[in-house]
Amino acid sequence: MKFASVRLVTQQFEALLSFYSLLSGTAATRLADGFAEVRLEGVTLAISEERLVKLFNQGAATAASNRSAILEFEVADVDGTLARMRDEGRAEVVMPATVMPWGNRSALLRDPDGSLVNVFSRPVAPPAQAA
Image (cartoon, rainbow, N blue to C red; front, side):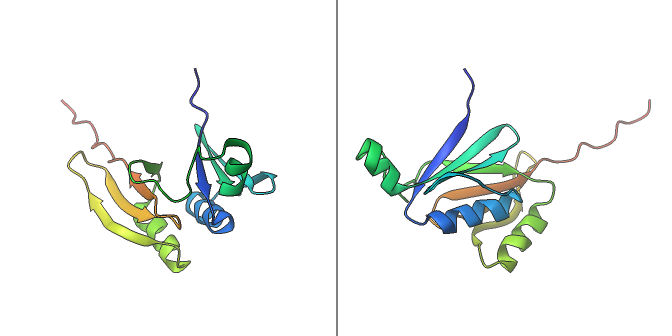
């Protein structure tokens, strides 16, 4: 089995697409009217207008109703990514850049639909000590 993608269902298609394209620095691939993918290393983030879900799977998903999943993006520079999102007026910051107990530097944002987005970097390992 291969985990292929996460799909977000939205009533704010262009806003969500713009948010994730800016966050990831990756242009979206538009596959149909109201459906696009942001293809990243290891996984694809699919974004779909709610009307498409209603057309093919009435009631299967409701836009902007996520309260349990957190989308996580590993970046080289948390502070730089956060500044870029703020400069573009796209970041609702839930938690400012913070070093977590396990060493990751992390910031929590909300996307236009209210989903939580964790932008984090892993700690750099200290150089090995010579014996």
